[in-house]
Amino acid sequence: MTMQLYGRSSSHYTRIARIFAAEAEVTVDFVLIRDLMSQDADHYGSHPAMKMPTLQTEEGVWYGSLPICRELIANSELNLEVVWPENLDRPVAANAQELVSTAMSTEVGLIMGKATGIAADNAHQVKMRASLLGAMEWLELNAGRAIATLHPERDLSFLEVSLFCLVEHLEFREVLSLDPYPQLRAFAERFAARSSAKATAFKFDFPPT
Ligand SMILES: N[C@@H](CCC(=O)N[C@@H](CS)C(=O)NCC(=O)O)C(=O)O
Image 1: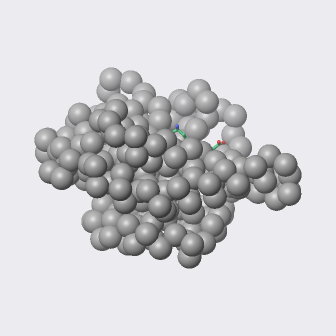
Image 2: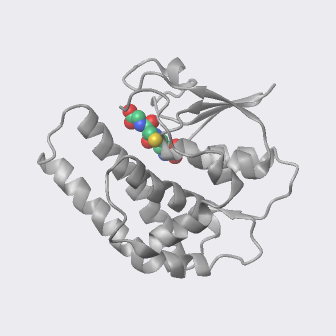
């Protein structure tokens, strides 16, 4: 059975999984989630919390980009050296992963708020934007140091893949300009040269939501 990845080409969490699948040379059928307002878990590949991505395998269904990436690597024949979040044993690297994860989920909150008509000056939206700016400022100053702590012989790290997806997504969804973040932009431009990144460029499968 070919594994099925449920998600969207416009989703940063989905792209993390797609980059891992491409790097691991694991074939997945990409199943598009049509309606993000649907309250039917089946429309998300049986995700009870109605989120993307979801990976369906012979063993069962996997929720969340990190468990999905682990399963993709476990199914790879390439024996890739991957740095996972639990391997980040220096504060700067662990904090970078935490802030990337936080910024990604804050960005989802901002996008979904805008898509569902919540005013930009709503107190929680304002707080979320300030939170995102705080995370991005920290990442601009510290992501390079964090990446420098990673094993030099690695093939891939969850930190770099997720940071790349976050940075490109902010511009793609017009949530933030990257002009104040030249270090992050340069990192993303370097990572974008990988064939896995080129093969998974963000695009809207449907009109934006
Ligand atoms: N922790 C999850 C987060 C998944 C998530 O928040 N996905 C977002 C989109 S990229 C989503 O499904 N949003 C739709 C919604 O919240 O209704 C992961 O790593 O995959």
